[in-house]
Image 1 (tube, rainbow, N blue to C red):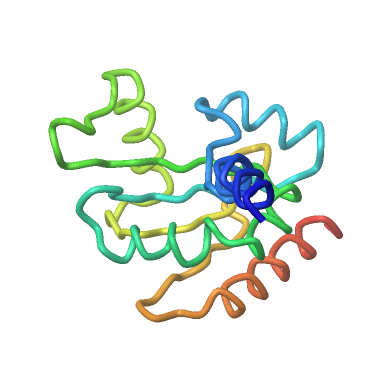
Image 2 (image 1 turned 180 degrees about the vertical axis):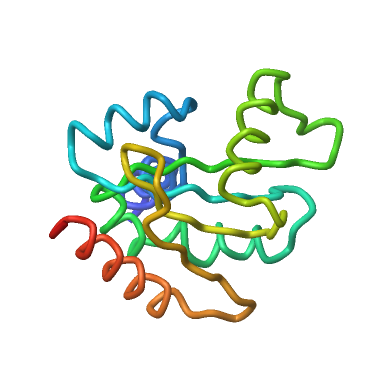
Length: 152
């Protein structure tokens, strides 16, 4: 039993790391190229990671679930963060990059906002996250968006 517990303790960081939502790319130009090469939509998530409660809930309740991990290989994800706290501030280049994409795809400053674009930067679809939304509903909508993208 002690060996099983020890093994489980060793594996937990690896398992949880697999469920952590991460950017596929830090730069939109790299994402555009990969989107074109692999025929995958780009999912832009506009988030305020340290001040926006719905953004934090989206990450915890959707983006870090096994259900999301199971479909995330069918898209290219970029989390565009807009932190408030000084300790979480982005580099100047990251901030400018995120602000440029926000001007284009989130001009109203809605948080969280999830949009899907193609390799040419055209808006394909968007998904809303509402307080208390179940992951199943979000994932089903996500799958529908991905299927529609793959068939075009």
